[in-house]
Each structure stands twice: as structure tokens, then as C-alpha cells.
Length: 147
Image (cartoon, rainbow, N blue to C red):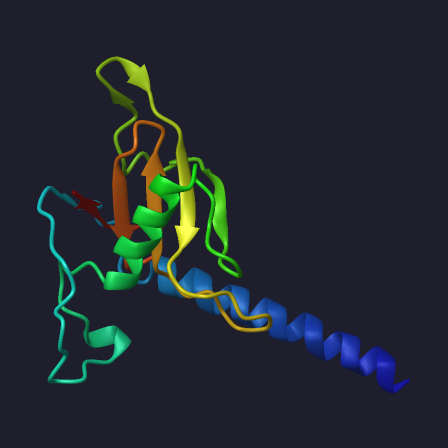
């Protein structure tokens, strides 16, 4: 019988996590995503020890730049034990759909090492079929262009 209760517990935990994710996503309403055109790099020395939630706006972490550069120099592949090179459909149309009349396709990449059993977090790099990179700190709501 304990196996049955364990299964129920797991199902309820998953449903609870999905509900939390849904509420977080729609808590602030349907804000218009922002794409900035500047290239900003992470500060080399973080003196004020900001937490994840206190990250300055328009700052691209060094990890994101490294993931972008690695993908661009290795045929779209990821480093060992990283997740990426998977299709990003751009359903919300937050990124350009065409460039010079060519329909763009996108691939997404995690910027942190994948560890089994841990949440992958919201940060991603998205790369267009033309090689334009974008960083998102908030799981595709806003983007900063990597130049």
C-alpha cells in the first residue's frame, strides 16, 4: 500500500509544481517582451554578491557568452553534460521571424551544466539559423541580443 501512496504523493507534487509555474508565468500579466540591441557583458568582479533575483537588467553572464561561442564554433553542439541544440519554436514571436526575407529557425541552449535531478533554471541562449544569439534570463519573456 505504501507504493500507492508514494505514487499519489509524487503526482500531487508534480501538479503543485505545475500550478506554481503557471501562476508565476501569468502573475504579472501579458507584458510585451523586450529585445535590446546592445551587447553587454557580465562584470568581472561581482562585489555586491547579488542573488539570482537581484541580477542587474541587460547583463549577459559570461556563461551565456561562452555557450554561444562554443555552439557557433562547434557546429551547434553543446559542451559535455550541457543541454541544448534543441528546437526553439518562437511561438510567442518574441524574436524576429525573418532576416533579409529568410525565415529564421532557432535552437536553444542551457547556460549552466546539467545535473540530474536539479532544475535547469530559466536562463537560456537562443541562436537563430543566421547565427544571431540572444540571452534570456527569464525563460523567454525578454531577450538581450548577443553581439
